[in-house]
Amino acid sequence: MGYPAEIGREQQAIAPVFAHLLGQEKAKTLLTRSLAAGRTPHAYLFRGPEGVGKQLFAQVMAATLNCRQTLDGAACGNCSSCRKFRSGNHPDFVVIRPEQGSIKIDRIRELIKALSYPPYESATRVVLLEDIHTMRREAANSLLKTLEEPPENNLLILTVESSKSILSTISSRCQTIPFFQLSQGDTVRILLEKGMEEKTAVLLARLSEGSPGRALLFRKTEMVETWEKVITVVMDSSASGDSQVGLLLQMAEVMAGLKENLFPFLGLLRIWIRDALVYPVGQEKRDGAMGNTRWTGRDWLGNRAPEELFNKLRAIDRAEQELGRNCNRTLVCEILLFRLQQQERK
Ligand SMILES: [Zn+2]
Image (tube, rainbow, N blue to C red):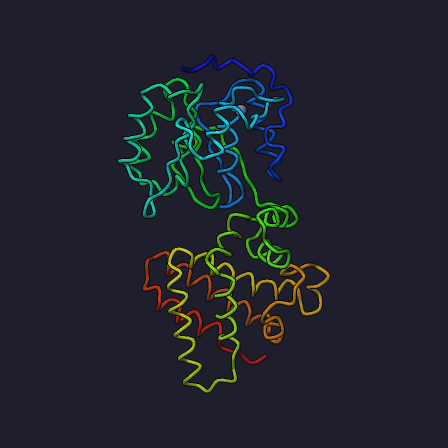
C-alpha cells in the first residue's frame, strides 16, 4: 500500500512528460515546471476551447504523478499504475463530468466525502472535474472549501471552456493553465493518427478551428454530411416555391434533431459564410480556406454581395441567441434557413 510521494520527483529535472502530445507549449512548460519542482498546487484550472487536449493533459499529469518508475520524469507506461491508467481503470483517478447538462451538487457532496479517505494505492489521487461552468452556484459553493484546502494527497484539476465564465471564488483558488486552439497542421496530424483519411482530416481541421476533439465529434455525428445536405437545399433555386419550402422545413427538422450539437453546427454554417468573405473566389486555394478543397457552395456564396453575407452571419448570431434563451428549436432553425436562403439583389 502506498509509497512515499518523493520517489522519482527529484529526477524530474527536464521532464519530457508531454513530449508525445502536440501543441500547448505554454501548458507543457507550466506543468512540467511544477512536476520537476515536485510542487503541484492544490488545484489547477485548465482553461481553453473544447477539444484541444485539456482532458488528455490531466490524464498525463495523473499518470506521471503516480508512475512507480518514471523515465526522465515521464510516466513509464509499464508499471502497475501506468497499466491501470492505460486501461482507463485507475482507482485514484476520479473523473466527474456533467450529467444532463450540469454537474450536480450530489456529485460534489459524494466527492467531498470520498476525498476524506486516503487514496487507494497511489501517492496522489487526481480528481478531474470537467466543464465546471455547468455547475450551479450551490454546487460551486459547496466545492469552495475543498478547493482551498483539499485533504492531503489529492490534486484537483478543473476544466472550463475559455468562452464561459465561472465564479471568481473558484478561479482564484486554482492555478490557471491556459490552453489554445491547435494549429491546422497539428490538428491534421492528430486526426491522421486517429486513422482519418487525409482529405477529411484537412477539412475537419479547418471546420473545427484547431480542435481535434470537435473534429472527431463532427465525424462521429456525421455533422459534415448534414451540413452539406443543409447548404445544398439552401442554395437550390431549381425547385419550385412549394417544394423548396418543404425541403427547407425538412432540413430544419434535421437540424433541430442535432440537439446539443446544434451549436457547433451553427459554427459550421458561420465558417462557411465567413470564408467567402475572407477568401474571395480564386484565393482560397492559395490561402487554404476550407483546407484547400473546393467546397460546397463556394460559387453560390461568391455571387452574393458582402452586405448580404453579413446579413446571413447576423441571422446565425440571432439563431444562437434564441437557442440560448430556449426558444423552440425547430422554429429557430426554420427561420434561420429561410434567412440563409433569401437572395438579395447584388
Ligand atoms: Zn509507470
